[in-house]
Length: 341
Image (cartoon, rainbow, N blue to C red; front, side):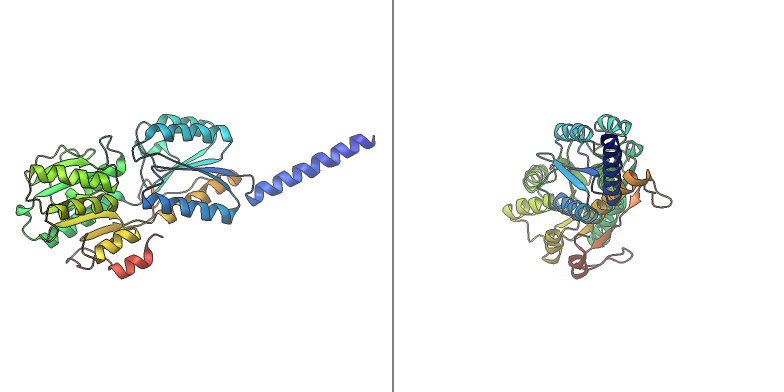
């Protein structure tokens, strides 16, 4: 009889401890899957996720592709997260279409899936998306470039994109830039089909400095008179500038525009390497995502979208020290104060 009573007391004591631990968040596991561990944007995203996880007592496992575009590593990471019993996945997807099948398997297993920065295709393949309005980010730098350039009929444009799989973030920024600059995008769901003679060409950079340098070199071979350079992100912009400098064109007043707003990128704006950049807030994306997984694990509650949008908008600001009429912006001093929130 004593053994039975001891078992009952032990059972309820263990159950109480388990429930208390769950309520405090200590038994909740989550995963963060980013494109790379090299790009400063995703380094900051990881930093934000880890900080919020520590604050909330959540066990966070992190994964990243070897390079931007490493889809297979991300698939394996999703499988690992499902097997580990995680309650949710935060993912910045490399292939926004192909990753939807393994992520659906995660959702079927009861995990909350949140896309960070890069919307999935379709966007409903995630339970929620925390991201910059990437089209707006592109449009802002396009409008600024057009207003700053003057006679846009004389523009000779280099387009430095992400990769040939054209993930959503790649397309949105590219098409936003072209729209802001006043160029017909044809099919707005893809880049590279435009027939405007001002566009020299599109090259993939994989979102890194080496890729940006190689892409810029290729486009300069097509037309050495390029005077406007669109870049998907600031590492690619830094590489493009190095190629222009090596070609003796860094003093030619070529406009370089970009997206991200990391501290090194804002410094490049301040120093005149980049004319303007659109600043995102990856730390905010990640911390909000961790909070959402905790809510899901404890209450079964999914996060709400920004009213009127099909995602949660974490904000964007144009950073430049040469503001253009009609284009809202903040200067590099404020940009450095904000990078990366």
